[in-house]
Length: 448
Image (tube, rainbow, N blue to C red; front, top):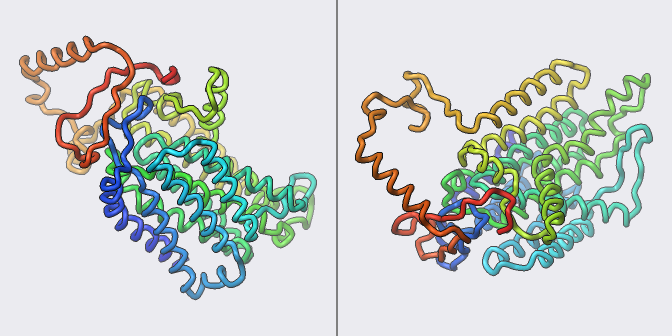
């Protein structure tokens, strides 16, 4: 565990320290697209944050290869090299897309090629544990198709959810944490060396996200762009593929004893079929809903709109930060709930806790305008928006009220229409001048 924590810290430190220079590089090269109608931010913000994340990946793999307890992963398995090869290819395509806006079909082809590169080097699904049947060996073509499909779906699910500051990095970090605990249990608890690569990939992925989040939280100073979202999506898929298709279920010796005992013991093997999907359940649901919505409206499945789940949260009244925290909450509940059930499947307390937390999540969704207030003694530790107002602050001068009403009147008199694109200036998110104001107030899901 100590070596994994060291690898995680090194990855996070390298990613964090490189994000600042990468931001300046992105501004200098003009990697700051115009603000589109579907965007939530108000000022041009540099992208290319995936550059820092990729070098964090390289640093994590380099450090792990020199640690005594993790060096065997590189000696006994070719999966780390396969991951690095596929990650380098998808990262390069993402960098080009952040700068030149590549076509969606080109990116889809690059995703399939990246998955194929990993398959050629051994990172593929070899067998599947099917409940009621047992272990089913896959042919080469079946394993390749299933691997490519899982990689493409995961990459696009993470890419679709990357719409708010800190959303994609936080959700993937939560997913990586849940997957790390699961993979570490398989590796350390059952002494199965084949689960070590997946454990290492999850630890490095956590470090990449944790190192990038301080720069990407609202208001974001830099976006990860497609170079980052596709990269972390590929690593998450590689972790799932490694432990799902490489760990032999027979090595766990679960098919012993009575039928009921074997069923409960088989859960750690069958969970890999479910856990990767539960970890990205919200991004995957967003992906499916987006495809259905766009197809139903006669649009291309790759056409962008403002109908994603995070856009819906903003439309019903949630603030930017609260929408992100709600998405974090549901992601953690689904991922860690499934993980806890795989460990203690016979305990009803886990089910009751999951149901109770789900009810709390529903209440949070139904109270978009409720702002909690901290007690007086804790006001110095919370942001100003959670502090109680004093009587002098509540008595707003009439002149200020008239000024606010006049500003709202001027905004309402503006002609409705498309958002006016804001050119990307040399100063990016810190551009001098007033913030751009838009007249676009359409509901989420309307054609852009």
